[in-house]
Image 1 (cartoon, rainbow, N blue to C red):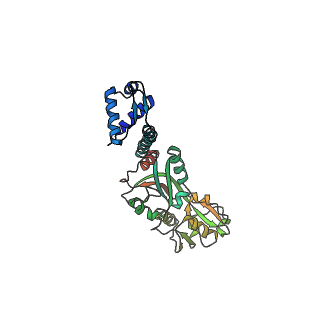
Image 2: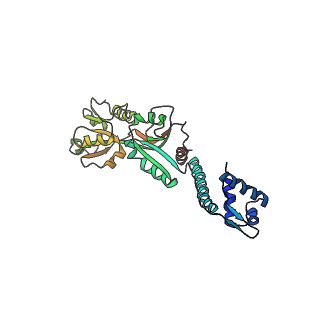
Image 3: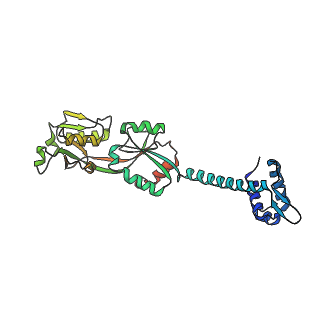
Length: 291
């Protein structure tokens, strides 16, 4: 079998066309270099170098092998560098699952920070429901989730952001005439929100805010996405309690009012600790736990 070192040594000899100089450059004796050449020629079944007492020249086959071998060595070097880059996480791919809520909070900043540090990694972003993140991470379909705290205790979670909730009202709602609105004022209103099995942390925070206000919502329209909730509020179908970041949606038919002493909802990254994708490990290193 032809060895890489034989090819490299041949290329030095083909460049120098002098056995003594080539042997010195590759740290071999001239007889050892000659034996390597003979072994290479025997394996190829042809003469690569013609030598006389006065000259050393490449044969036609030698010139062709020089051309092909040079490309082969470059390919091997590229393969080594590429493999090392993937092992180090500076190349490869990272599959990120995110919820619609994360898209309005930390997803852009997390993605920008990661790609600025690792520009050669292929980043795949997939919007999913919070309840689906666990299954997707455990199956390896995604490497990391950008969302609220996950349902499954076997996943790790790093909080990166937290914010209070606010009230979302249709622009024509009578409560907009008041200077201050408490959650208590929403009692008896139709609420629009996500089901608990879709977005448990947010659902629980909303119910906590209502409980603090002395009531529990009785008439509810359920939908999955926060954008859908805002759209339905804009149509006058009900009121909602949403994360403050949803103000960025800037729907012309909705007004937002603060909640005093509001519970907070957080957002961060979650992952399966058995996932050893180097690209994931590098992402986690960018956002270490607070000391």
